[in-house]
Structure formats: C-alpha cells, structure tokens
Image 1 (tube, one colour):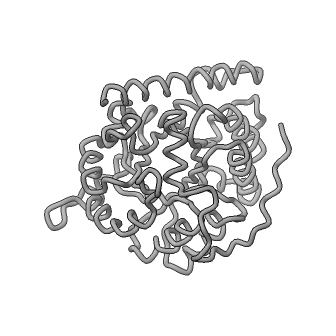
Image 2 (cartoon, rainbow, N blue to C red; image 1 turned 45 degrees about the vertical axis):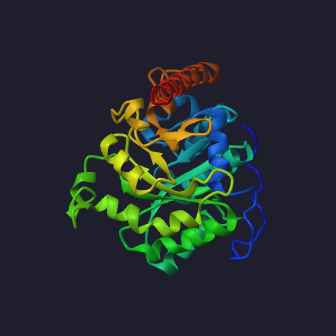
Length: 317
C-alpha cells in the first residue's frame, strides 16, 4: 500500500470572495461523467463485507480495503462515495481511515462525495463544513450529503462554502429506503414533501450552477427505487444534479436509476448512480485469497455495472 498523502495546509476558513479552485463542482462532475459514465462507487466498510485478505474487520482493514477500491476505481469512474458512519463506528481510528481514503481518492483524481447526511443548526453546520467540505479540511471531500429537515438555514453554511470553493452539496429529497414513505411521501398543499424540499431549494440550486454546463452542484438525492418520483423531481428541479442510491443490491434496475436523467449536449445525463455492495462486495470477493483475484472479481462487477448503466442511458436517448 502507498503511504498516506499529507493533508493540505490551507486554512479551513472559506472567504466569500475566494474563487472556486478548479472550477464549479457540477462542471467537474459532468466532465467526469461524460468521460467515464454515471457510476458512483460506494465505499461502505461493513465489517461482514471486508474480505479476510485485508485483515480482521476493523479500521486498518477498512483503510486497506478502501484504498484498494480507490486504486481500482481511479481512471475508471467519476466519483466514489465513502459512507462516514461505517468508518466512524471505530472511533478515532476509523476517522483516520476515512481521512486516508478520501485523501487517496482525491489524489488519484477521483471526486469524493462523502455520505455523512449532516443536518443541524447553523453554528454546528459550520463545524461540519470545517471538518469535511472546506479547503484543507481534515477529511476534505468534494461534496457532502445533508439532511434538510431542520430547515434551509442549516443548509446555508454548506452552500456558502460550496459556492466559494467549487464544492457540492447533496440534499436528501426522495431516498431509496422503505421508510422514505413515512415522511417524504406525505402530501402537503397538494404535493409530496420531497417536492416541497426541491422547490424550497431553488435559489440554492441556482447559486451552485456551473458556468460551463449549467448543471447545479446543489444535488438532490433521488432514490432509484422511486423512478416516478425522480421524474417529478426533475420537473421541479431541472438543473439539479441527482445522486441516485438504490441501484443494485437494493433491487432497482439501471433503467429505474436513470429515470430522472435528461438529454444533454453529449447524451442523456443528470447525475450519478451509486452502487456499493454490487460493485465493492460482489459474489466471490469475500473468497479471494490474493489481491489479483480480488481485483479481477471487483473489476468485473464494476464493468458490469457500467455496461448496464450505459445501456440504460442509451435506451433513453
């Protein structure tokens, strides 16, 4: 394994007048998707799904396994999505592993969308921004998932930082889990709550639009298990990129996953589709005895997912 990279020394503070380094997140993401397809690989270190090849389940194994996934994804996919909670279960050692995986991924040219689902009052949100989204953050990511249900003021610190630093913010709208129906699908004033969320975010969506592509780095989480809802979300937020979970292990098809995508100048586009277990922990990966065996199994699963999504996008053209 290669040694961890030294974190940047830039201050965590983000000045409002600081131009985005490297361009707007939405433009960078669309460039990468056009080059590699819409697959986003989730890095979810469930203890039961880390092959023995990487050691006993724990922070060191999660670090080694996550780094191996990053090396395999580099140059093949647009973005990876580490799941913060599955690293945090191991405390400070787990956070160190997460920081290493994020640094390694960004150094390898991958965009990092940290799945942390933060959502708290403004002053606390500023702490999360300093820890995960600001330039030079201890665990710097290119984008982060947030929960909108404490109100727009809790999202504002993330959007302000993203505007200044060319980052992204993925807001939960219609998620892929069965419990999404408990609150997100409730009708209020004639439409479901997740559509109210999309409408309320319109000014923030506009603020994070990329100047080259017109897409916004204020993303909406639109689960593949609700393709009809994704179509309505697209109508409500035509310029928001989607983060689409639920494809693969959760049962949604590739065609379901791209239901909210639309025609663009280089084909159907509109976000990224996450696959975690289906790519990172496919059948046969747990039994691999050597690194080359493991790489062959995971690379095959990655290629299969990319081919399925490419066919689904092509069928929509």
